[in-house]
Image (cartoon, rainbow, N blue to C red):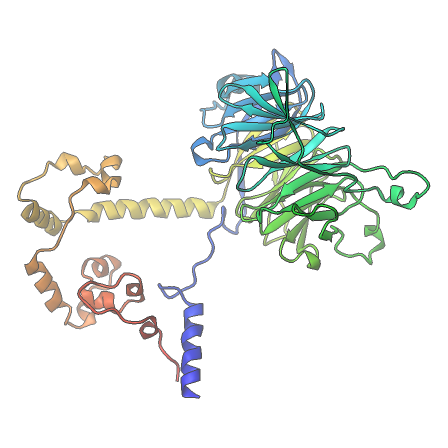
Length: 518
């Protein structure tokens, strides 16, 4: 009994503490406090003086291009903007466009409803009302392939999580199709045409068409598709049937799972079918959001679809199938457009609280996107012919940044004390210029690899070993003194030595660092 109790206590302690003695919380984009939204700038979507409503906006996926975002519009143009430009507060939207837009071209002679970056941001996919999807070389603004096969407007598309040659698309013809861009079947007007490798027709049927058995059932528009992170599952949503369907790409005949946004089926007010407008997922693929025409956004756990939506969020107005919703990459927040001219942000762990409102647009806010690399930067597109950039932060984040900055300065000040400087002179046998270690030179400070390795002389080692035998009460109570006077024995008594034990002492097992309760 004593052994079992001891073993159980050891593993309970391991699960309840970290190396520093407390549980480290997951670090989100923002802390759990009130968000502060600040508009950075707004750009106008226009070509040759003619304004046009934007339909899709997307930031680049790689960190080195995180400042670039693409915008597609109703006239078939694709425009690339640099969000890192300096925007004067007095500048107009047109002036900001001239300052930030560095490339635009006619991608289709029809509206472009969706765009997607692939292949390390070197290529861009555009889905259009001309029933095609085009692959663009961004550097040369040249079309390298055309995906043909749909018989209706292509509303949504999603690339494979790890293989950007694979793609799924959804159309108003009621079909979703799979594509492999390595399979080029024909050429037309110097453009390679690519046929689909698989297509499912009538994936989302209208309830009225199901009841009418005398005539052929008419398929309903597919509004959104997602290639889930497990690399084999596809999620689709339709306009009238108020259902999410999940398909296995290895056998596409029937969906293997289905979910309904209505969490309470007994409520008579919820029995009317509401179309699902948009699907989104976080970077890990664990959570999925579905925005619905009932003015709610539903959150699902992809591993527990049978339990229905985990939470629902309300406050925005979704009057059309152009309003989009995006969950943040860390699954901490949800951003949505709205038909009332605002954008809304909810904290996922506080669904009952009122959302933060982003005010500034004049008409319906349609497309939205999170920057995957620049934390806190979002973009919103509206029917007022503008795309606006926002910075989302809170006071807690600002305070944390200030403390981190102060700690860095503190480390720099204490990095080279008088004793350490003498040791370096004794080791290197030649004085160094003080200009090389100026506290104002950040580059020299951060480039630690260019600095010589500092080792303690043998005399200092012996002195440190003898001092370690003294009582712990002789050490200073301040954190700085503890850090400077830490000896091998004090490091030995710390749980952190489990991972990095001192070389002068014998390594213990992990059970030696957790007390066993009697």
